[in-house]
Amino acid sequence: MRQDQDASQPDRMYSPEADFLVFAAGETQFALPSFFVHSIIDKPRPTRMPMSGEAIRGVIDFPGGAIPLYDMRRKVGLPLLAEEVEGAIELLGKRKQDHLSWIENLKRSVAENGKVTVETDP
Image 1 (tube, rainbow, N blue to C red):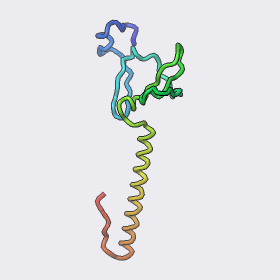
Image 2: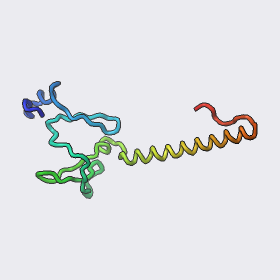
Image 3: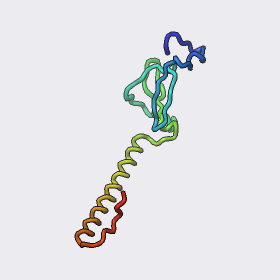
Image 4: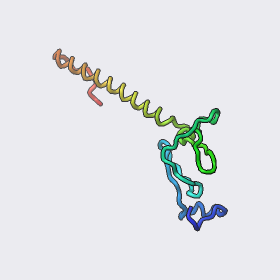
């Protein structure tokens, strides 16, 4: 928050002159008034806490005590990034196999001097 802003004056905190932290979870963008941002930590290593809920990745040590670390993707109902990447890799593997089968069928049609029976529209 800029020095001229005061949390007791929300109309100033949300004014066009206010500073915001803008971030994305999936394709959804969020903006958080900078007043609420104490610091940004690069790749914190959270300690898992039992029964803390799906959206809480764990807690991290911070001056003044432990604080919860939220996974915004889970908070807005998206799969974990690792799950999304794994799904994309699996899909690409299937498409690769489809393409290889298509090439083999095309080669066979050409070798047999027959009619091309494979799909030709991508």
